[in-house]
Length: 179
Ligand SMILES: [Zn+2]
Image (cartoon, rainbow, N blue to C red; front, side, top):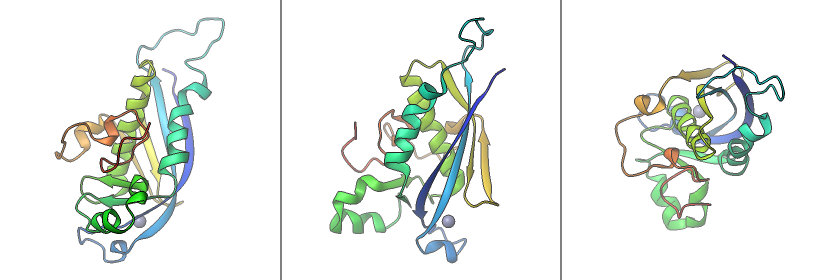
C-alpha cells in the first residue's frame, strides 16, 4: 500500500498545569515539526497513466494552509487554564490564536487533535485519503507518534462538535468559527 508522507514546521507555545513538571507550568515555546502519513481509503492499482494516489499539492493544501495560518505561533492551553479567562477579558481579539485542548496541551493530545483535524479536512475533500500515522517532533530529540483512531485516544470530554472534528480553520471553540 502506498503512503504519502509530508512534514511542516511551526512555532508554538504552551504550558502544562496539571502539576507533573514545574518547569513546564511556565509558558514556553517549541519549534515543532509535524509529519503525517496519508493512505487511500480505497487502495487501488496505479492506473498506468497518471500513476499517483493523489497529487501532493491537493493532499496537503488545506492542511498546510491551516498550519501556516492558524497553528503557527499559536498558544496552547488546557481548557481548564485560567489564562483563558485572562485573554477573554483583556485581549479577546487574540482568542482565535489560542489552541485549546481537553486537559494539558501535551504533545500526545496535540498529535491526536491534529490527526482528527487532518481527517476532517480530508473527509471534506471527498474522503479519498485518511491519516494513518502522525509524528510530532517537539524538539530535535523528542517526538510523539500516533497511529490508529485519534478519537479513541482523546479524553472523554467531548461536547458538541469540537474544533478537531470540524473542517474549518479554528483551533478552539471559544471564538466565532473561522471560514
Ligand atoms: Zn513544552
